[in-house]
Length: 194
Image (cartoon, rainbow, N blue to C red):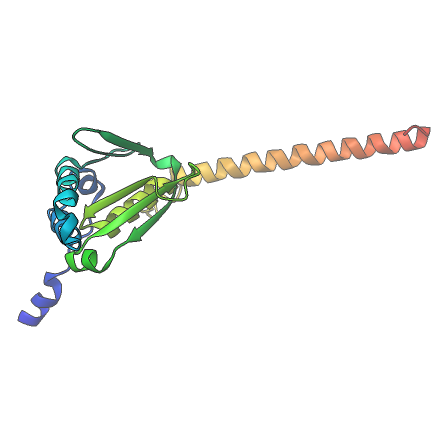
């Protein structure tokens, strides 16, 4: 019984959309990461730690139904807002120290023409569920409702059948246009006009 508890103790339930939308601040381990990173250069430590402190204390995230907002800064305030529809790709990146602290950077790229990421979300412990959430939002994928046997026709099936009917109509119109052009070409060849 004890061994079973130890195995399941580290397993956390998956985050819901509501829990992800509630993320507003980076995890406190981000400050530890900044301290360790800045202490790698002892002579420059006083000059590096102050901007890192300001960034950590002012960094805010907002996840809405339309997109992501990230803002930070004291003297020079910066805010980046990205709609989910603009997201082209998402990457996870973590170095040795970030992995040790359980952190990763989520790099969000758009079609803006930059080779780098438009937004880098850092200081999040739940980086994999957040990445999956962003992927589902950028692709428009929602969890499909479970269909019961008594209710096989859903809104999704209705939209699929409407799409199929529209495609059949387009195919009929193209066929009629081709036949009209073929018959017109045959009459112009008979009359000798080109």
